[in-house]
Amino acid sequence: MKSTKKLQGKIGHVDLEGGYYTLKTASGEIYKLDGGGADLRVPGATAEVEGTLEDASGSFGIGFGTPVLHVKKYTLR
Image 1 (spheres, rainbow, N blue to C red):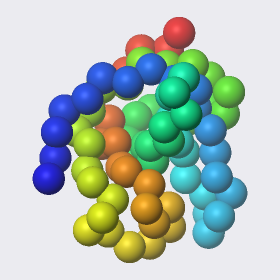
Image 2 (cartoon, rainbow, N blue to C red):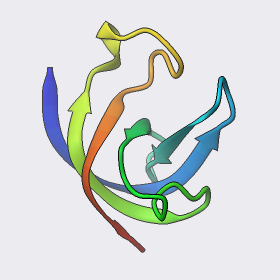
Image 3 (cartoon, rainbow, N blue to C red):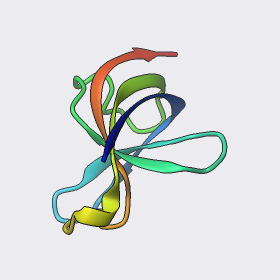
């Protein structure tokens, strides 16, 4: 199931199997980012990200259990 979300938070990087980028919200929720430009993929940057949210229950791989946010657009803060 996919839904559209607009979230604000801090960009992080998980250094596992080549790594992946995350968005951590103020409430502590963590989302794996799929997409976005090189300017978004900077650990420590703060951004507002809008995209479709994919439930992690049907996926398996790096970041297993972490919901995936497919980035449509973003604004750096």
